[in-house]
Length: 436
Image 1 (cartoon, rainbow, N blue to C red):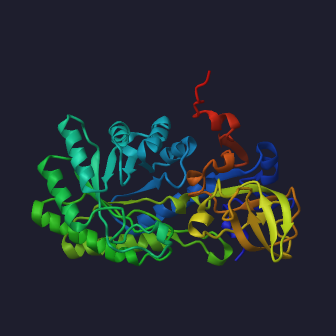
Image 2 (tube, helix red, strand yellow):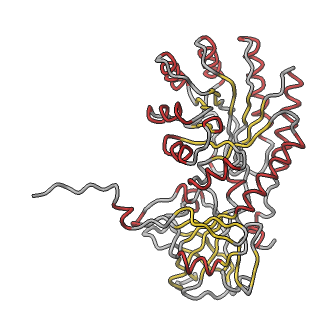
Image 3 (cartoon, rainbow, N blue to C red):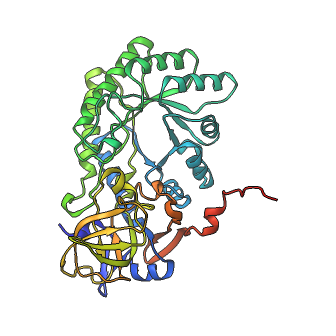
């Protein structure tokens, strides 16, 4: 498969240079500097439409999409989420502040978190329409807020299904010893507390992990959720109006993983198994909520770096870039594999493998290993596709790195949505020691 298939759907080679949405990556890098991140609106919208078409085809009851803000969130992204009629999943007061600044209606904001602080919960009361309670202590804190006269948002309970999906251990969330969610016994007690105290309990949620490609483990988890719902009907006469199996559907990050896993396969299994499970238990079909983050935004994003130094060691050709660990920690955290193309003449034949490393003081600051590439000279631009998710949102200021500029691309136009950080930004939070 071609590396170009990893890039946004509007990617072309024009005059021997990469373009996205009709914009020259070379020209953008010259104007805005590097490292530089680009988001292609057409690719975002294509992913949303694929989800919506699959839901229409495989689930006859109401269904919706909640964009997982943790994948990448900015003011512009929150505005786009609202314009496209998606809900926005936030974690904590910081992401809620972005949602509020973007004027996302509280009814379209859903909140997750395993240890919501008092500040987080107060922000939820102001800016969110749905809160997913992760544990029994949180339910007790919500009960105290309600008794103090606060109007709570709708509540869902996060179940721990005891089944993880096949992905890196750091991003599995469904196993029995996961820090996320409640056991069946804890969730049953949470239902009792909510119903006896008049809390607005309306839904059930689970999540098994991020970046998986085989949907089969969802069957057993859905069965467990529906068995729990049937038990709550028998015990309390309560049924969830909303059900969410979370998100986490993966995408291809390098050419050996192509083609991109089709969202239709994922949605079809959920929709058809949920229907069959409800029929078998005589349950009404709930409103189905999916929470795709990565599979909407990852392919839409591209990172552009400039090669500063080409170095040859005993057995490796190093291309040392002006970004890496600080804007993309995923290779160091998960061993994530990426691919890349030179911006100029991207179809040049490779001359051998190259290791792409960043400028930071860590041996783990290696973005890509042993990637076949042509002869590359210092000063050339390198484009890394599938850079839209869990990079900028997990980035840092390590070694004083300044977070990169971010552009929004649409129909030949590039709009700056996040400016590059400055040294003044790095100092803004600092308070000097007193002195004479």
